[in-house]
Length: 391
Ligand code: NIG
Ligand code: FE
Image 1 (cartoon, helix red, strand yellow):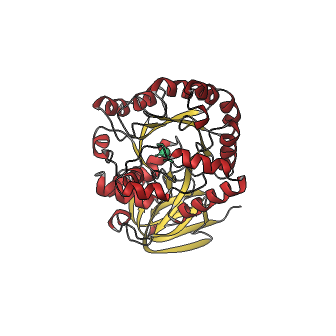
Image 2 (cartoon, rainbow, N blue to C red):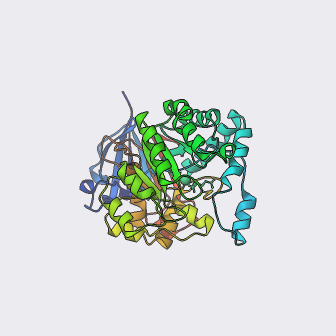
Image 3 (cartoon, rainbow, N blue to C red):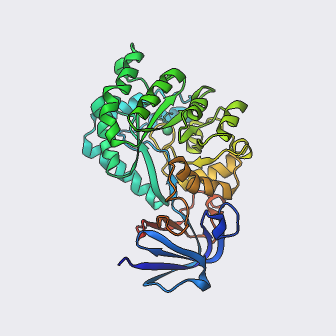
């Protein structure tokens, strides 16, 4: 029989289940307790009503929330782009051309080096409260290098994304159509068994709308589900394509027309905002307020990668989203937990309804609002993943 644990004396519990709490989207319960049974949530409610269990943890009047769901990262890579960052902070703009630097370093790395890197950043993310993460290939751009990136990623997460269409491989600079044929043919065949998702960077200088549609529909035919890097650096067809194909998520969403916002609002596609990228590229912020006011479901993730957003910290992204994208602290916390789960089409994470996975973050603060109120402070003081305390 699995053992049960009650965490008591929680000043603020974020359940993300309105009916369990105060009827707000965060489903807040004050003076709360949560019971974990095996790897699942068994009960949430007022501390005084908590059932007896085998083990007891005193939260000491601090806040507990669902573990963060980081639904967008690029963690299978080698090398470093400090020089590029320095150049940007001296006024150079971000063009995504630096992806080639990381492709060269990643191809030259051994499997062991790539896996060491990945586990290093995962441990970093876990210490900051991330209990689920998605990660992508996209720095290999050959059949062998893309498939090995996915094989390595799949040892650490179920949420693996094939991004052979990150940029046109430098080996095909003179023949982009041949690269699209590779991505939708031999490379897809080698990669599909290791991935759940397919992604494409739909942007000037990467892949246009027609190429992106061909790539994503080829992936769908092999059982992969689409998600898109859309409208990051300029206006374009990415968001409309995401909606057309019922992609789980359109990511970045920095340059949107009213028609793009309407399309998202009337779809099952989540807008995933990645403020670490705007911070690290000194780009214009996506307008979260406009999306939320239109009724779009918004997720908040790190985009952790060595080029445009080298942060694994969801709390940092929450602080940016509140300060610079005009989200309320409640909205930002929801988007980094339940929103991330929606972007991965998962109903078993991102909330604390009994039956959900027991993925929890304990803050050294009385409420979740402190994640934005106390930026840069390492507030995460406990993490449970699948019912096991890991931090
Ligand atoms: O999501 N936009 C494309 N891809 C990444 C950046 C990758 C890189 O610069 O290495 C992004 O921002
Ligand atoms: Fe990205």
